[in-house]
Length: 442
Image (tube, rainbow, N blue to C red; front, side, top):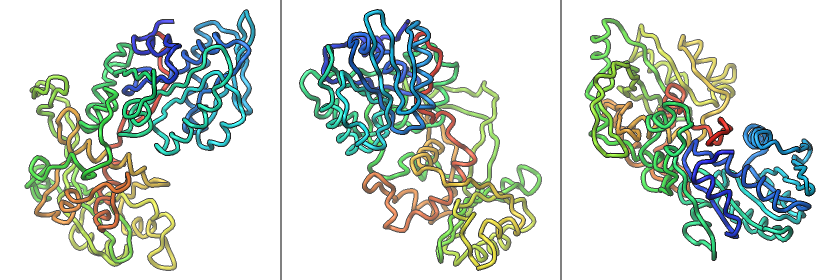
C-alpha cells in the first residue's frame, strides 16, 4: 500500500509514546490513522486497540468505510461487529481487535485494557473534553507488546492538538505535519476551491495544517471598510441591468429588533487574486469565467415585529422581486397568534429560502470571512457603508468571547441577518471533514 511521506512517518513510528499527525483537508489523515491502527494490531496479536471519532455518525460515514477499503486493499481477513462497533483482524499468528468508539460520551471509553488508542479529528472536540479523553484513554493503554497513543486532525485554532502536541508536549512526543498540496492524488481544483472558499487564516489551517488563531480579536477580521466598500446603489444596478434587479434580504427576528440586510447579487468577470505561496498578485483577466458577488446596499433595523418589517420592505422596495433568507425560527415563531413568521413572509409574496435549522455559527463566520476576502486575496462581498452604517459598525466591532461571537454588545442582529443570506446563497463547498478518497497514495 503506497503512502505519502507524512503518512508513512506516522504509520512507521512505533517508538514515540504519543504521536500526532496534523494536516490540511485531503492530506489523508483518516487513511493514515486506519493504516496505523492496522499495523499496531498486527504487532499486538491477542490484544485490542481503539480508534475514535467525535460522533457516532462519523464512524459510519467516514471511519468504517475507510477501514473496509484499507483492509480489502491489504487483503487482511476480518470480521465486523455492528453493535458496539469493532473489527476482528485474522492474522496467521492470531487475532487482534480494533474497537470503534465515539468521544461523545467519555465514560464509554472506560473499562478496556488496550494496546493503542488513536483519535481521528481530535480538534473537533472541545479542548477540555479532549484533555479528559486523553487522560482516560492513556490510563487504558496498558496491554500488548507495543503501546501507543495517537491523534490526527485538521487544526482548529489552539485546541487539543496544539495544547497536547505543540504547547506542552510530553517526553518523546512527536508531531508530524501534512499539507494538502502534498497529496497529488486529490481531484483537480480541490486545493484551489479551499483557497476560494476560506479566509487566509483558515487556509493556513485547512491547507498547511498550521495552528492559527481562529477565535480571538474581531469575528469578521477579513472585512475592511475600504477594501470591501462599494458606492454602488440599487439605482446603479437597475440602470446596468435595464430593469429592476431582484433583492436578497437576510432577516433576523427579535422583538423590537427585527432587521433585514438588503443585497444585490451580480455576476462579474474575475480580475485578479493573490497567490498565497508567492504573495504576488496574479492577473487572471484572461479567465472569462464570471464570478458571483454580493453587495449589501441597504439595511432595515429596529423593527418591532415581522409585520412591521414586511411593511417597511414593501414601502422601500415596491414592484420588485424579493428573495428572503430568514432565521430558521420563522418556521415556528409567531408574530401574532394566527400564523408563523414564515407564513407571513410567504403571504407578502416573497420567495422564501429557509432551512430547518440555522447554519452552525462557525460555518456562518467562515463563509462571511471568505466572502469578504478569501485566501486568494479575492473579494466577493461588498458593503455600501453609507447605506448600511449599522451593519458596517457591527462588522468592525463584534469580538470573540469564550470562543463564540460576543452577543452582549447587541451587535449580532444585523450580522446574523446577513449571515443567513450569505451562508445559504454562497455556501462553503469544501467544508467536509475526512473523506475516504482513492486509497493509493492517500
